[in-house]
Amino acid sequence: MTATMTSTTTPAAAGPPFLLAPFDRRTWRAYGYLWVAVLVAPFALAYALFTLALTAGIAVTVVGLFVAGGVLLGTRGWGSMYRRMARRLLGVDVAAPFPRSPRRGFWRRLGSMLGDATAWRALLYMVVTFPLALVGFVVSTVLLAVAAGSMTHWLWSQWLPLQRASDGTLHRGASFGTDWFVDTPSRQLMLMAAGVILLYLWPQVQRIFVTLFALLAASLLGPTRASMRVADVERARAVTVEDADARLRRIERDLHDGTQAHLVAVAMQIGEARELVRDGADPAELAAVLETAHSSTKDTLAELRELARGIRPPALDAGLSVALETLAARAALPVRVHAVGLDSADLPASVTAISYFAVAELVANATRHASASGVDVVAGIEPLAEGRGPAGRALVLRVHDDGVGGARVRAPDSSGRGSGLAGLTDRLSGVDGTLRVVSPAGGPTVVTVTIPLNLSDGQ
Image (cartoon, rainbow, N blue to C red; front, side):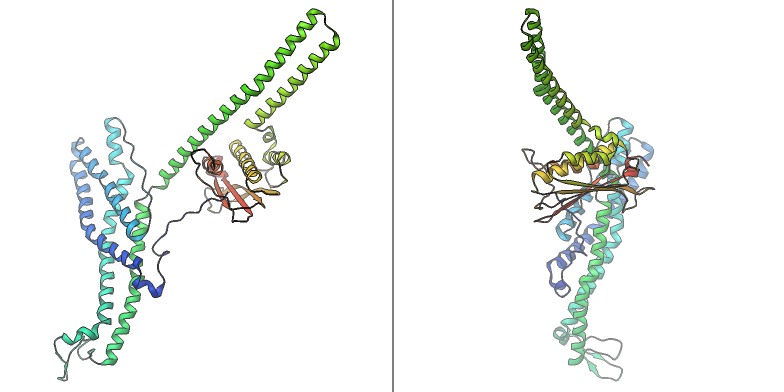
């Protein structure tokens, strides 16, 4: 039940050890990135300026704006190229933005082309990175060249032309000022030491520029937060629809195979009793048939109550705290509930329901898969760490079991196995909820469900 933690690796975080940095392959790949960036930058800038000029110059024709819109959408291709460069040379994986959805109608189609945020952000990247590519390449190359020249000066300085100092003496070697020449063993060693220092300084300075490239790529070439939010909502909505459809199918199957069959049996038993009454049968025999019909009716009512409880537990009407206590009492293993401040909290019905079913799912997982001897459920209202919204409150549920641990959130396979927690994560995203799981091998497992209340209740 552990959610896999993912993070974007930046060059600064993934840098090689200091002593090995000048010789590490990642350093030289980053230098290669600066080479490619400075070669591509003039063409990218020219394309960006051409796009702006074409859009401004052709705007009066209106119809010609479709041409400008097509050129603008071409910046998406530039963005794709820059993302590949970052992935292959820097080891930075920038997620691709969501594909464009063309619209029907003259004005709507034109607006979708000229208003494509991904294209404009890619164009901005092409403009902003032009000076960064020039400065980064020049600074990195100069540092590397000076470092290499300083360390090898003792070798190639013998072919330098003679230079005359102010006192008339002749010297062969690099000069600093008018009378200081690197032409003695001690000065050669000093220059070589300075070259070594510059060589180790080179990767650190280069990493500054490469990190700026990576940050700009992640900010301008990836999906926007709004588009990711829309995609999450659409996925959560699809999961909710599928979940509701599956639940309806299950209810239909249970009604058909269980309740309906029992009702048919009751009808047959009542019919038999009617026949017995009409034929004047023995009262004891009639009483036995009626007793059987009565027992079948009670069983049918119990099944109907169980089905209704699966749709929406009646205990939720008394509040989440009571519902969790009821769930704990019916669990197959000991469940201890610690609810703080839930009775006074005005929780939305959607939050209460999804919280109940989330805890039910987690307790069921601990029972089936964790080999746990007990479960602790802690529920309460806490401030949001991010401080989102004016209220910044969240319903936090922590489910702790002492099982074997080592569980993970996995996408369902072809048979549908492994989809429980993944589906729960998607359902929580429908109310901006998150699922965080810590489950080392050997246990224990701690699952934290956080649902922002200010976002869920419209505050």
